[in-house]
Length: 73
Image 1: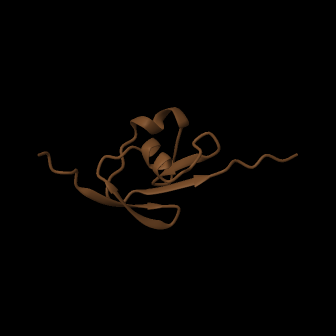
Image 2: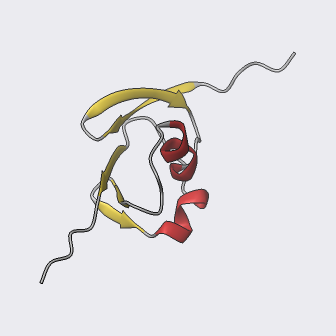
């Protein structure tokens, strides 16, 4: 039997969240019920484009922030 991947704690929108080490940013958004088309994402204060989320693994201590773009006129 294969052991589960080690857990890491990331900070998601200011809340500590345990997740498997190496979970991708895209998978985290899905796991948290976030509509990926409606938010922008930052990882450790750096913008992550939507198309890069599935190739962006998370590590212990990472800080993930999501925010909705505000359009005004």
